[in-house]
Image (cartoon, rainbow, N blue to C red; front, top):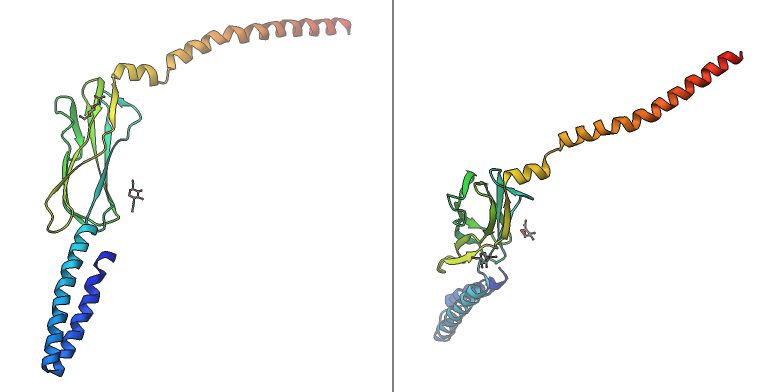
Length: 218
Ligand SMILES: *[C@@H]1O[C@H](CO)[C@@H](O)[C@H](O)[C@H]1NC(C)=O
Ligand SMILES: *[C@@H]1O[C@H](CO)[C@@H](O)[C@H](O)[C@H]1NC(C)=O
């Protein structure tokens, strides 16, 4: 917007120009031609200026939201597109091709999505839910984004950040590490019972002895 202020200035020159025309005369005609030339040059300079400065620029982040990625359990991927440029990004597409059909099942969301326009300074986000079919190490790579930085510009290709390598835990491993361990705790409490019972018994015996002694004395 700042870059386009020239248009406004030259716009008012143009108004001035039409005013001088009404006065008529050769001198005025000359000056109006000059002004017109200035106007044309100004607009050209202005638009060149605008092109170099008021473009859209998308920064795309791709994040794995799960703390643990587990075979057969839901995995959420979040994409955030942030337009850090100064004009709207149009014809935006995001395509995710890094999750092969054999290794991942799409549970929810689209792996290819379009936005008509993303205004400057704003974020849009998109998420998909997948289910990994195999355990092992997986390289989470970038998603592809295309957009037009301005009305006339050619389509630009960009890539999201890549979360990198991550481990997909097997379901068995996950259960072993994160199940509530009920059996273990049950066994532990059973083993604790004798250590609590023995002092109780000793106390009870001495207590009853003392009571007997008191009774005899009276
Ligand atoms: C957009 O996202 C970026 C990075 O995630 C953040 O710094 C910024 O504040 C967000 N802007 C808005 C308007 O939400
Ligand atoms: C993951 O994939 C990216 C893109 O293909 C590649 O640059 C990177 O080296 C890979 N990482 C590993 C550890 O293989």
